[in-house]
Image (cartoon, rainbow, N blue to C red; front, side, top):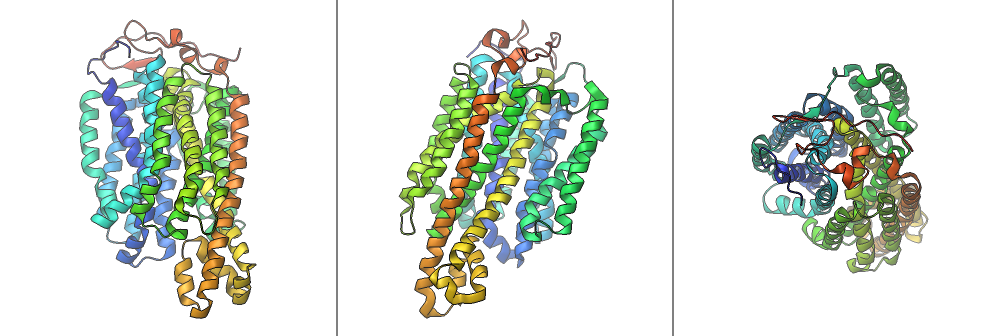
Length: 543
């Protein structure tokens, strides 16, 4: 570790607070799934209402990532981060006290907005405090936390729901968040762009509107129909707003919240595509694998979480190793190799069969965990390395936006493909043909995890045949979709190898010599409260 100190000794505290905040906000992406049956019973909620409990959070999380990052660069990263944290904690409290599904969904949306601020600004805060080898180690820890939050969601959600109440999956955020906020207020430093310009309100409104419509269309497309008027209208409106947004940003130049010149940077485009592809392939795969362990193998949420510990442990160790490698190994090799390992892990799902024990998933878990662990640290580091330090928040916000859009695309697209494939396989089975016109609907119930209930409503004489056909259709459908996810990951691997180049990174991120802080310990282009600063580093171009 370097000998660099800060007025508040806040470097380690900053990393700790950002990791805690990130763990909380990503945990809330997965933790709610295991509590949905209890929420349904508590509110007598419909399936559509429960979908909005999930979708509202994802929508809020995706909509303002770039906006939050841009505001942080202008108004102060610590200030915006803490404002988002306060919003997240208060919304968590409101979710835990909600008295109906509508109120819960509304505050889940607010919770997502707060989470978006934390997710966008967090990497910029880490990049502000760490340079060189220390930055690689810090992002290694950050990447491990990202993976842990995803993997531990079912385990923590099951423990809180079974041991206390579904309300505690939200209420637990309050005491933890208050402690983290206190540490942030006392130990974290403030920083902002050296020559902050006026807030780009037009850009924020246009981009937030465009992304909101895009993600909402992706989330609701399967339920409403992909070619229905509302969904098509949202896609078209989103495209129009994005075009207008691009034109506005080009006219604003340096005052724009999004520097369109970044699209000329090959590595920026490569990292963006790889991030989107990885999120689409891995997040949808994890959701489907959790569904397999819970629904096809009939394990409880707590038991499911325990069985995902091999993936979790592998991910955490790999992330720690990757953090130390980011300054020693070309990052294109880390990114490309990580996606190749993810593709291998997804393909190894083919080892399971209708009668397999959960241990048949272990090779797949190790492959996926190793790939995800290697991916997250260089991705987080590269997300801020493509721009000058003064615009780290904007760059981080852009990358997190690609990640969340990838999650929405993956879960919507691969989820729909899985449901369709399972339904087709079941309908064409011998047992399915005996059900006649209701076979496809029965198959949809199997894909959604309601196979046991559907079989319970069928004639008892048919139950064994229906159970066997449902299990086979579920497993075969899962394998087919995992192969598609693997193919997408292979594409991401190739993009990583071919389109991530060190020479495209900003000068302050191209090597340890340039990464070394100035005499005041501050990377170029950043303004930190109470300390003099150096002049912004000239933007690096392609060479």
